[in-house]
Length: 150
Length: 345
Image 1 (cartoon, rainbow over the protein chains, first blue to last red):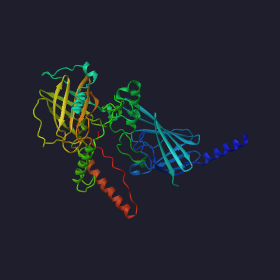
Image 2: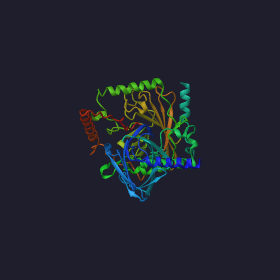
Image 3: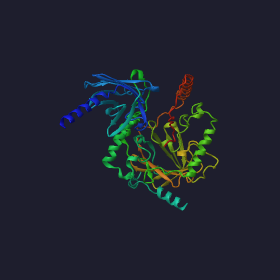
Image 4: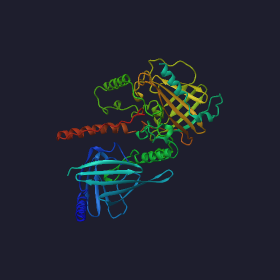
């Protein structure tokens, strides 16, 4: 029985590893966690993701007139500049954690009383042809569900 | 009707407790002196009605550390979701810059929400007749456009887009900029100037008769009087547009109370009374904070403003894109347009 449990666990791990992020993902309107901006990000209705052992690139249609915006997240733990709002310094670090991609985005801006810092966390989880993006800032979280279209 | 009058009396006599502990100085002619520059920019992160997360609680239940945490979170939200001043996605910039510095001061808010009466913090539902009449008025306004779209002409845009008015009480609702107000008094008059759109209401304090029923004005016809240290202003005779929250401009009566509650604070409350739209009057309130360092500033809405021209030309460009796409068999569906109007709150 113990041997069977080990086999089941190994098969389980293999499934997680194969459920990659790469592909084109379209927002499921039913899985949209609220309308409008959250944490300063427009909701992407389409994402194109490519990934390698060292980095993940996510292209979203969140630019002006749905133009593509591309962010590349390195997986070596380093913090790198990524696209962000005008006037803000925006940097991100990323890591794979328990089968998820977790991106930590740090935004800062000079305010009248000094520099302000905010941290936003994006967690991407794939299960089959469904990708769930959980975006959190402070105590608030927004969840969006995407379906694989290619 | 008796119930309505009793409710209105109860609402209007519900002055903030702090009001009784502050006595303002007097003008040379003996009125309470409220003159100065004020702002409510600190309240721009405050929702109008009670958010669902506070169901079952009253405005007085949210206080201390919980209120401080709430305001801190909202201030972050306001900043992160600030309107953008431009962007170039190709260069890696998109949305979000807090172009208006007032956005940085939402952390000084003071309220969990604005509606104080009824105690559930919600604007009462319109009566079925009120809703029907409101829809009929909206349909009549749409008919006046004679089939034109929302951006075929400058006349199709809101009065706010056209720099005409934010209406009442819209002119004193906190926004992302232009939140300064100036109160000036003279014997028998109070004048309130609003930075955004630069309107000024001159409010007579005597008992002169109201203007005729046929005369309708964007900011209505106001009469004021003093109840102790509180300035009470009653306004009627509104034009059909803007119609505050779909109310009937012919029966709408707004009762504002300006109660000094400290050396630098006035509690501003507005009771909305329209018996043809709502069964009972309802009230919202917020503080106005004195800030003489930020006097009302120039508001150049028309001069050098390309927004209207750009807005209309963008609409033409969008139509062309739709035609070009349709010629290729692609149908572009539009999301519902988000229209910012001064009477939205």
